[in-house]
Structure formats: C-alpha cells, structure tokens
Image 1 (cartoon, rainbow, N blue to C red):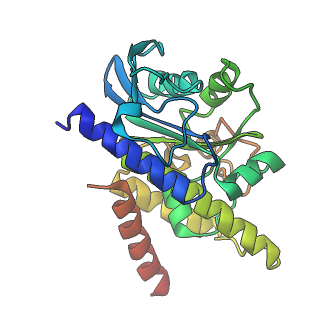
Image 2: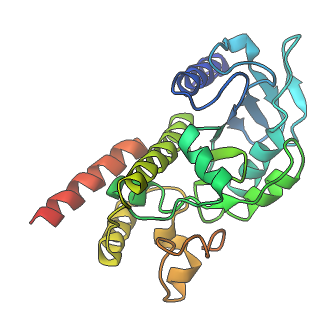
Length: 265
C-alpha cells in the first residue's frame, strides 16, 4: 500500500500538471484522494496548485472536519463537493476540480458536451452534462452535482468549471484531460463549419465494446435512462436527458484501436 507521504507527493504532481496545462489560474482548483473510509487527503485553500509541496496537503474526515493540517493551511472551501462524490459513489477514490479553458467555456455558455465526435470521447466519457449553478463553498454545488453522479464520471459546473472523479488519482486527472480535449476539439470543429458526428450505429458499437471490456465507472453505455427506455441515447439529445440519463486510459486506447480496425475493414 502506498503511504500517505507518497500520495501527497502524487497530489502535488497532479496539481502541477493541472497548473502547467492552464487548467487553473492563480489559486483555483482542488484535488482530493480517499485513503480510508473516514480519511481523505486534499489540497488547501488559497494556494496555487502549481507550487505545492507535500506539507501543504490536509487530511479531513468524511464530514470535511480537519484531522491534520500544518499551520497556515486549511482544506479547500470546495471540500463539501468532494465529500458528496465520495458519499454517493463508493467506487470513487479521487476527485479533481479545475477550470479548463474550453470546457469551462462550454459550461459558461450552458452547452453540455454531448456530440459524438471521436471514439475516445464516446468510450471514456459518453456525455458530460452540466450541473446547475451553485454558490461556491455552499451545499448548492454538491446538491447540483449529486443529480449526475450515478450516470456520469465527469460534469461541467455551470458558470464555474469542471469536475472529474474516478477509481484513482491518475484516472480522475485523465478524465479531466479528456473533458478538456473533447471540448477543445468540439470548439475547433464548430469554427470549421460544424463537426461530422459519428452515426448512432457507430456510437452503439463503441458502447458495446466498452461493455465487453468492462470499463469501471458510470457511463451512458450502461446507465442512460433514455437508452433503457428504448429511446435515443444521450448523444445528440442536446442534454435533455442530463442527469437522468490495468489503467483506464490504456483500456480506452486499446478499445479505440480495435474499433478503428473494425471500421476500416
């Protein structure tokens, strides 16, 4: 088992990656990792995620109460949002919140990421809905996010940013990267006259292969209520079903490779 100090170092490394990629500015964003049923490590409030060292990291219990923090540091004011994710998704071991430029732009514009434009995004994310606006540091954001937790592994936060969560810190970070890359590609394709979307048959093939590989997490391939009722899946619905509807990244890459091979036959 990895000791706490090593996990703190990993949190600092991911914080630097997020900062260096421009997913946060100044002191924005926060990261947490579940280390036991009642212990969580999290980034502190009021510090840049690009310049943290292990002694910055705080430990809290499942209610957000401080268990350990060095002088001058206290948990992120958004810890309530993280704790709601852990409470309602026992499979989640890490949560990453950031303000990636393109994804946050879509969140500000009120546009969910639902268009099926590339196999990787369809397999890894399915859809990225928008959680309605809530005042930071209050229960409004956890309540808004809660509506989507059983159906998706990433959400946009209206007029705020993005939230991703998974079964490890690295996978939660990769989810955030995937959300931003998806948003950036969608934005660029819109400037070029609009994306050529994958067909419904192609999307369903990707969904089926995802199911066959048994990827962890929540995904429209398994849980979209529309699909369960025999209706169109989340993709292309414009968000109308939002909230109702070995390494994971390596698995997604392998699935995508196989699908592309099949499509080329």
